[in-house]
Length: 226
Image (cartoon, rainbow, N blue to C red; front, side, top):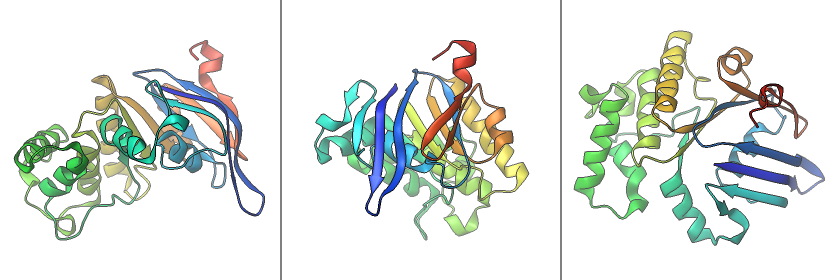
């Protein structure tokens, strides 16, 4: 599903966010990319999610060489292959949960009625079928994150990238979100979770640890999975 080969990412001023990173994540895996602030894990997510192009190396997502795709093709790849879940939800204010999810399918080319049908099904999937008409300010933090997850999976992408998905939540709501991500993984979705929380990382089948823009440990190497 994900293949990075000698990937680097540098910024003006001599800042190196990724340094010759190579990583393979197979279809159907549940993986934590863990490290402290400044370790490069968010840059890793942006690179995997094709939000940033690398300075060097090769990135392949679901078989596609990112370097060979135009910006429009990258947008199409994100729209059909990748779902994103962010720490601070990124929901539109004064818009119902149903339409926040449906708007995530804007680039699918589907008519509004079909986008809303899929949004309703996704909200049912995350246990919020009874809250579809509520706006973000009427929802708890855990519920808002569930809306964000519904938006990420409404188009049935094979890959979901979650950036600190429990970072803005209390422990109970965070546990509920992690349970939901485990359930999605159980249905076959490849899930990559970016986190600084070692407890969350330790609860996942595979942990990739980063520091100073490099992978310093990969639990798959210990089990022979990679």
